[in-house]
Image (cartoon, rainbow over all chains, first blue to last red; front, side, top):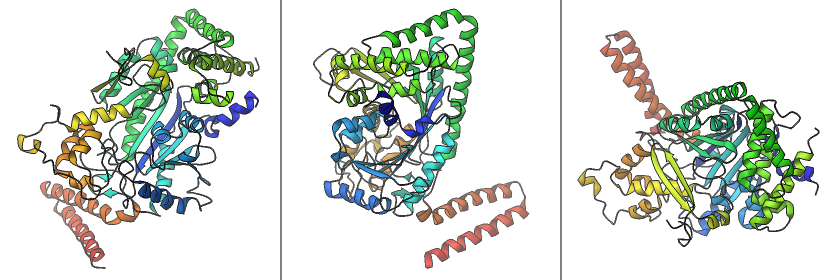
Length: 356
Length: 177
């Protein structure tokens, strides 16, 4: 398969659209956790019960040609997928590692452009996830709500007047809502302002983490900011509070970028060009170094220092250079050392596709 | 320090996560990190679970009175069979009824996790929700009426009272049919 074809198949269609504030906010996501009232939660469910959950939901979703305006949803059953296929779904953020590895009768429903994924029998019976590029929290919440209403019109949710939507984990009870944005914050990292911003965000009841790995040391300067509290606030208030903080972080990042460009222009250019050189020339590259260089190149694109490279290169290559995708492209299982070689090759070839 | 995955090799990667001021740490060796695939995106379940089970055991964080601290070993959910001790250990409810079975123990946990909140204020399912929505509205109206009385705005208070009566009648009829 040609690289161009591989990339176009590998990248979810929704990712190819450009969203608002997309120089800093890469994507927005909303997840709603729901359970069916009739069945025990997946963590204690036996095979029969888990199976019934799937068949009861698929009975009204599989027959529907247009689910709440989202088109037809295709169901993938985890047990019928190869390990590498599951891994690729995880790397595309369409399913969780937990669903891929541990779920009994786990399944996922996906729409055509992969902006909607509904996990079944994960930690909760139903996890509705909606994604969009850029800063579009309100839009994704609306989309998730419409699907939620559709499912609810066919079945009874586990809901309590006092506690709200009942979930398996106490951290999700109430709204069952987790909203998050992925932000590219290279200038705040370079100017070391990030170390003061993260604790401030945590103080507000929001979590900040690096998307590729635990902890706050983010690979590729990509950070995920999400709400922690799900109980006691309305969905709209949760989204609004998160959006307010995200807006402030965007302004801080823009200010830091300006500061770098004005004060350290030559040093900045040197750094960004070196990173591009590394990506264009290396023969072996580990994911951490690749992520760092890709982040630099993306910053260079946003600041118009590195012209003629498409903006989506960071998002694309951060996904494609993960172990699952590298192995899918290679068609064989690779050792970590082999992956580092493949990763370097794939990045070089991808950059060559740019008409510069 | 030994790796928390294999418990054999020295941990060389250290992760710290802070949520609502709660700090959790995770230590792992390079080999296991590679095994896990250079860290799968979003694999953060260990920390929430660790945080919770610490919380549920009341390790000094949760203000418990001596009487509420005692949990009879027999405390269990009738629907799914999960005991309170199991729940505290894994940090997950087994079914919707667990919320009722462990009701008396939950407020301190929810307060801690959800910034002091214990009561849902968000979306209500459409099918089950009409009467719940009206009850919520009723509560708000009653509060408003009290305020009007305190402010000596008796005309407004009377209007609100009439509104309350209407809703109460509707709720009553709903129950009869």
